[in-house]
Amino acid sequence: MTEQFRIEPLSSEHDRSRFSSGSAPLDRYLREQASQDIKRRIASCFVAVSVQTKEIAGFYTLTAASIALTALSPEIVKKLPRYPVVPAALLGRLAVAEHYQGKGLGGVLLGNAVLRIARAELGVFAMLVDAKDDAAQRFYEHYGFTVVSGADRRLCLPISLALRHFEGRPEHPA
Ligand SMILES: CC(C)(COP(=O)(O)OP(=O)(O)OC[C@H]1O[C@@H](n2cnc3c(N)ncnc32)[C@H](O)[C@@H]1OP(=O)(O)O)[C@@H](O)C(=O)NCCC(=O)NCCS
Image (cartoon, rainbow, N blue to C red; front, top):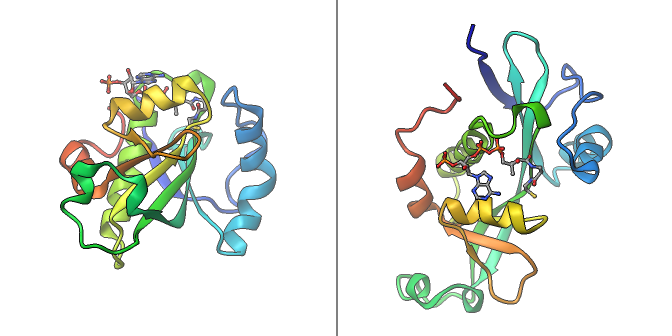
């Protein structure tokens, strides 16, 4: 039987205690901090849950952000009005449980975040991500994200370009 996932907001129904992505800070964040951030409206958090086992297979967080035009590449800036900053959404954290990694779920979670941002009823020009290491940076570059100048491992992708990549793709791994 092919495993199926639902992507939904984190709630008290979800068992976070066994989630293990290989990154202790990300696992600890899900266990100890995510609910507080949601309650205080600092971040929203979405989890991919196995329909069969109810296990959390992955999660991501979204936060309102902005980016200075001076940090964007000239090709992007030339299509924008001369505002000092433009609105963005920050995917602050993304993690997939170790035994689900390499099966497409990370890409599906990223695509789910892009579509969620694009459907929001407020203007969001770009998606920002914080990569925790070189491997994470390469994962985001694989989807067209480019490094933001002057920021440590922060990358950016205009939502219009992200939609070209993700629209029409399945929102759940096959
Ligand atoms: C990074 C992470 C989220 C990727 O999730 P995943 O489920 O293993 O990745 P997927 O299987 O969905 O890969 C999707 C695509 O990205 C590519 N990819 C994955 N990791 C990559 C890497 N390090 N470098 C380049 N490409 C990569 C895959 O080849 C795949 O390409 P395809 O769609 O053309 O086949 C996951 O490995 C993880 O949770 N790591 C630990 C925490 C972490 O590093 N989080 C990153 C944010 S800080």
